[in-house]
Length: 476
Ligand code: BG6
Image (tube, rainbow, N blue to C red; front, side, top):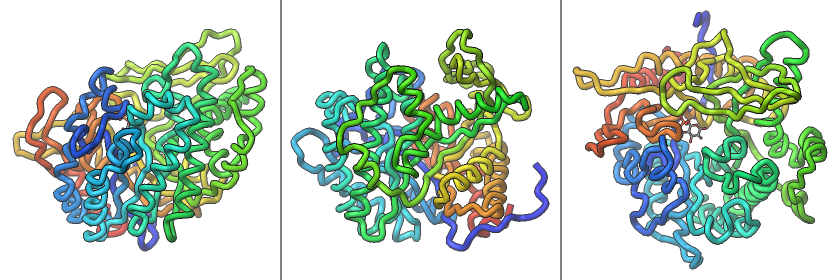
């Protein structure tokens, strides 16, 4: 990529890192925590890798925060494990769970790092799942409300930036992979009921944050994959718009406008789908005014016309890390996704497309005029320690440099962006391939097959990112 100037970043721009509880903490049954469905998935569903230890952040959080501080980071985005706070249905809060997050938050603040906290990142407590059939039962709504109120009261004096539910759109689109599609035969209809219940939980999280956290701000975290039309054929443009609605816009419109958009309402009608919207539900959603958008963006997709008589094809993600193992979906009458010849791909067939970042920021700003923070963006790679004892990751440096440059351009375009939190700070378990697919700027010495010493080794990208952060985005 050609850089002809250095785009400026606002003063106080938050330069951070990102993680989620089940992917980084380990200690899955320690200090009173009980299991989540994700903990079980990591043991039974391959290629998830066992998260019993993950990056052992639970026992290394001080060291991790120190590394963040040394690099000059000013924010850290992490999630709270619901089953650490409420391990069972007794209604009793687990004080040791509160203590862990209090310690982490205090450590961050002492080092001048702003915590950005996700309330829920895929880790449904097993006891909630048993009692309410996960997101399928409306009983979860009150439990979720109780949980978020507890964490706001416990941490809201120090945590001012909150995120509601991680990638709700991806959970619905990839229900099977992310563990919420519990009854596959009826998922086509069920997913909209489940989605509605998650929307109600999101609304509860937003409303309670504003009630309980003085000066607190909260936003959703959609997983964003910008969609380009495959050609200038008008039919491809509509296909791209259809894909955008069905994977992203339906959710973003709901969060920002606080009602379902016309596209999804007519889709439900045409397909005889009843999302089970009950009296009072839309009034609750209408009250949930978000303050900003958290945005996860790794790649882009390309869509093409798909005739109604074509055969349906499910999205098959590449879970091997060997190029060429991804199968694009076909949704007859709506769209199909296809390869983009203009961009390179990772070993997991993810498009490497920095311009997608600028596109996303422009798109979200144009549609919703709300401040934005990047909550995830990163490069998954097979990595090991070299003979010199270091970890050389030039591809990640290129990836981050190109992405950050595009954020700078989007800011110049007039978009309001207040932070960048790449995935991830330390290596952690990828959903796709455990530690075999590493994302960190700090290496964790362990593998999916063997529990090693969890030594932290800053990669070359750590030092590069640190320079950039300390110069507020000027020293490339
Ligand atoms: C995001 C999720 O969609 O992508 C993370 O919020 C996830 O939890 C990240 O780890 C990267 O995806 P993967 O499959 O490579 O782990």
